[in-house]
Image (tube, rainbow, N blue to C red):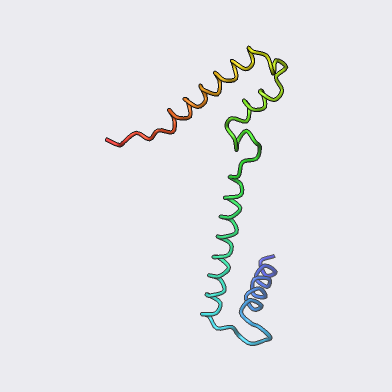
Length: 106
């Protein structure tokens, strides 16, 4: 068992250190390994940033639920609906302005 693993390891080392039965310089091997590590780091960091993308409209647009409720409301066009819509827009705007103000550090 251990001899077969050792044979596989030796074959891997022999194949990775020779091209067309000629040995590769150790500096070249180190450069190839560094390039591979650089590429892998960039690939996985790119995948990580893609994973942070919003998946649905409610994550991308915080007011999406209000907009969807507005579009599907059966009271649309009535005075009560228009008044409540204007009030909710004003409240959302005030909430946004209050949360987006950056207070100076002490």
